[in-house]
Amino acid sequence: MQIMAKPIQFSLRTLLLAIVPVAVVSLPLGWYIRRPGPRPPPVPVSGTILLDGDLLIGARVEFYPTDPNGQIGAGLTEWNGTFELPTRKPSINHICGSWPIRPLAGVYKVTVITRLAGRALTIPGAPIAPEIPGRYANPETSGLIADVTYDGPNAFTFNLSSMPDE
Image (cartoon, rainbow, N blue to C red):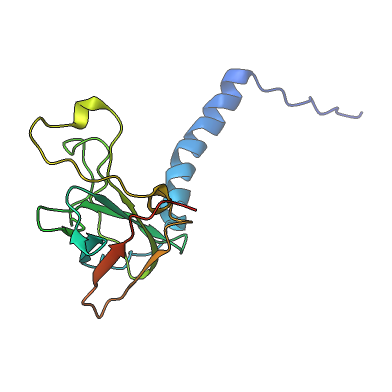
């Protein structure tokens, strides 16, 4: 007498009860295991922006890393033309468009933007930054490079030209 094995049949509910708990446990565990080690500390960066030798006030300075593991940094020039990339991590309380993170050590392409789009950002009576050529707004065409190191001092001076783009 031969005993025939009954084929195993699972209902969808049984299958889900087996798979979902495994997925719920394994996905976060996999993300935790695959996450990179501790990031190197950010580096303080500051500098001065000049336009034809004169201080440039109210310009947005952005540092774009050439290394894919780098960290973007951005800041605004003060009344004396200087900027400092803030040290805080971004939060919901920051002004829209700000990205206050210090960059890591590495080579950065730098952009400088003076006119913000939209009338909501203009303050009556505040000095208006002069318009600068559009090439400075693009990291690929600005020609501004900063080599940020852990040794410092990481204080950069960029002298922009008001000559129009060619």
